[in-house]
Length: 239
Ligand SMILES: [Zn+2]
Image 1 (spheres, rainbow, N blue to C red):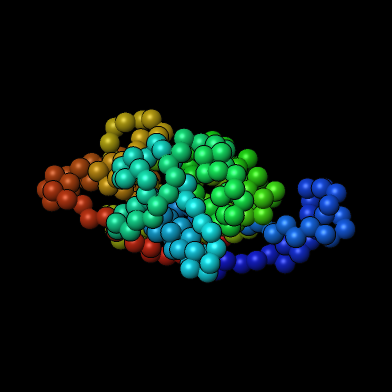
Image 2: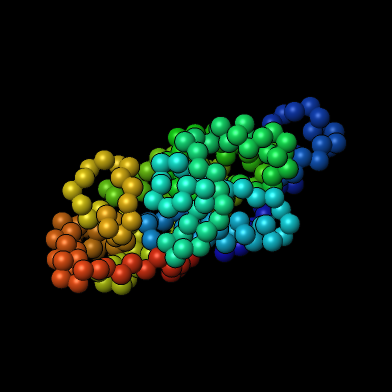
């Protein structure tokens, strides 16, 4: 997946600040890149790969994840395959600057956001960071919940994004490309945090046959004791 720079980035600033009118400002152009997909599609892995690549190019990076997700260590982002990256676990995004420190924030080039569906202030934060502060934001999150409804504010930032990448997982039942996340349990709250014990990636056909699949999955779980979840990056489709 390529980090592509829009030719429009050479256009003059749209924030109307007077210092930009004479072209004297060297404010860098910000970027917003969005990575979406179902659970187990490798979104965190893709996010970390991009952030690490930026860090390897000498850019200052930071990663923010939701403090709601405490499945793994709180001070690091951990992919399903165990790769770790230090990060800030916060309840919201707009408090990041204050907590990170103004001076350190000013030096930041790239901010990665994981589990973005949990941040209600995602849109405002991305505008602030990319439009006004000229930084690159790389956002990873679920586009839909287990009922395939839009999840949090992730889709709200599509109109302000430079690029959108939708990743797929592998259907746990037939092995085809999986676009959706099926909940195996009976709980109905939208934000139920869990791993392969609660969720599985499924193709369209198996999502639609959800109830029957859930029964089948429970039987498989009981008979095999373990369901293998493929957490690796399977396919990349840029929309
Ligand atoms: Zn399937």
